[in-house]
Length: 179
Image 1 (tube, rainbow, N blue to C red):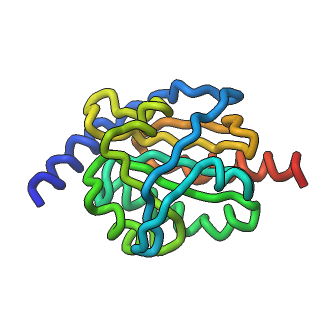
Image 2: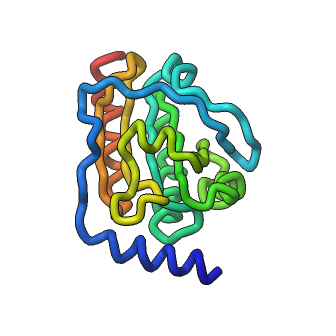
């Protein structure tokens, strides 16, 4: 418990200034496959397979069950039906406390969307989502990826407030251009 609280304090202290993700809008999103969980059940998630159904909202978060990550998970859970109605899939990825991701998928993600652990940070590094100030954690970075692997939106800020709205706006714009 002390370790979780210490991590939350560190992450809260870093939330003051937004940064910018390195993968730019228009770049090709790296493909990946991860072990994920949704509603407490583990499964294999493939970006390529998910993109066959529509855009993917990929968001990175520092650690499950920390204050900002819990708020963000709740916001994505509330928005998931809206994303699905637009044909989009949501997945969250973290390198922090990987052993708790399955529990987080049901408790804080409210069984609505998949989350995955990336303890080796292969996906996190490919998307330049390593938290610079504390590299064992992933940064709070969101991407929207079009079915052709093009990045439509990217946003990095430890404050979780704008991630869902920005992702939703990007998916709506994509959908309007691809009825």
